[in-house]
Length: 229
Image (cartoon, rainbow, N blue to C red; front, side, top):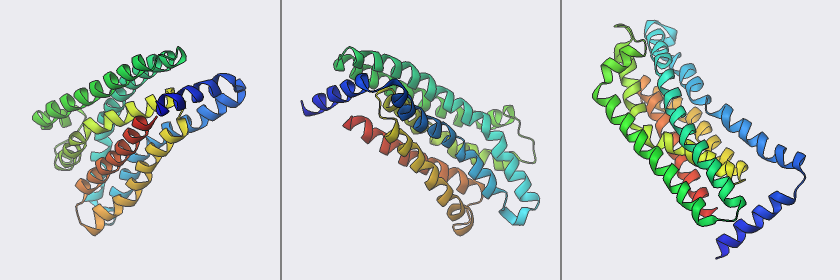
């Protein structure tokens, strides 16, 4: 009951605030969240480029991260599809103060994203080499690309679901926490990349491992935020 009352008070506050203030309150964290989603690939590219002091191995590894970029875009597309779809329904349901329908759609969007991510992960791992070649890998960069893409595919379910949770929080009016959840993962990725790549000597696989661990942190934070909202 306390959670429902808290949500009701939040909705009342949103409907009574000046539109200009409300737009800034929601738009700025949303813009930051969207920019952070591109940090993972940029950070991985930068640190992978330092492997072997920028020699031939670094060139191949950097190219492998570039090959994985379309896959990351596909993962994000699934997350945004389920996130925006469920989020729009949730915002309208909350506007009617129909929290039961909003909760049902939140669960539907979340679990559909998990299932879609798991399906993409399974298919990608089964057809890993053909997938990597389809993404543009050459024979030279194939070992690096498969090492990187394999781990990205393993993290695909929670990467997709975290984007859904991020969008659902924003559509509930909690854009600031959504930004914090996504941003925490982005910052952790930049810290883990050099640790995994150079300290633990995992090479390009370390960059992918840093990405999926960071994304899992974001997933946990956002899930906690959605459950408390």
